[in-house]
Length: 221
Image 1: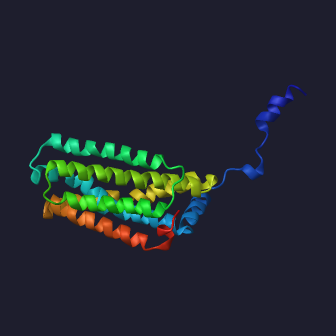
Image 2: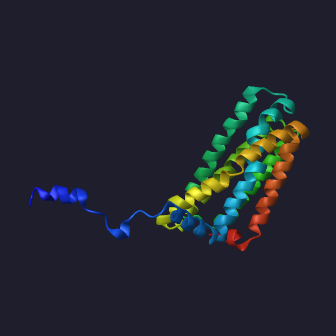
Image 3: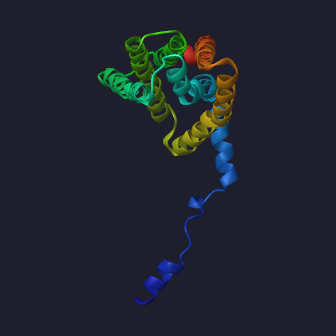
């Protein structure tokens, strides 16, 4: 009988209640959960669209802006990108001191609206010092949204769905990113990098105001 114990352990079947579910059922459940929570699906759609108006200018048009309008070189471009990091650090430190985040919707979307305004300002003829300040503020704004969104998902999504919902969020948020890069490149060539920042910043700010008009996002706490 003792010799049969290892054999029984190897051949025993798992409990039927814990059998692996079909992948399509998991996807259906997670997508259904997202569509049932207005602040969740609105934010995913919003982020997907904003990746055209916000990420496109910063990732594609900024080098051309530095060269053509600031008449500077790769050193200034690197300095601008590097200034984003202390901005992120300041934003993280500011939010990290709070024992509990309140008015998440207003702070998160307000932060992204500030980022849109900073994007718009980069399209104006500013000196390098002013441009660095604008970029620093944009970094703080980006950190505010990113940290609040991560914290909100972890607190308000059931643990058994968190991984799948985060996957839907990641896919939906970056779905239009390649189109944003392509459109930003095309627009930079046609109308110039300054106009790309002006238009992209204005669109981003307008989208933030539109999203905040919905009670589900404005009252998120």
